[in-house]
Image 1 (tube, rainbow, N blue to C red):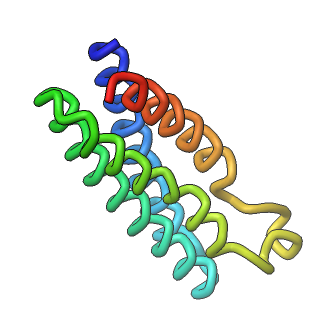
Image 2: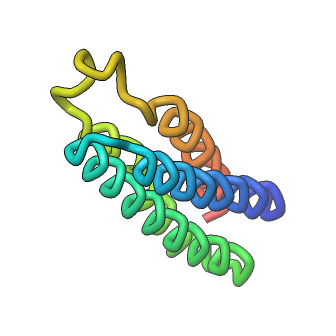
Length: 120
């Protein structure tokens, strides 16, 4: 179970980091200052989530599962907070441009949390 928790957390880290890079790229290409600001907020959220998940992975490796669970739970909210940044803009833009990334990240973080909680 330890190896599964570590693998799931590593996948969540990689997805958060990739999503951060994607948001940054979208922000650079975005013409609207409001949308650019929202993408910047998402970039910050995913960057912070990746950092916290890296710390959680270190704690899993050190078998400090309780702290890792706390960290993964804290990082889990990045997707929701990113989507919250787009509230009110969904219809104007044809949906939240980051929704697919947010959903996949959420799934990976929940799996990592469940596995780590199971051994805490």
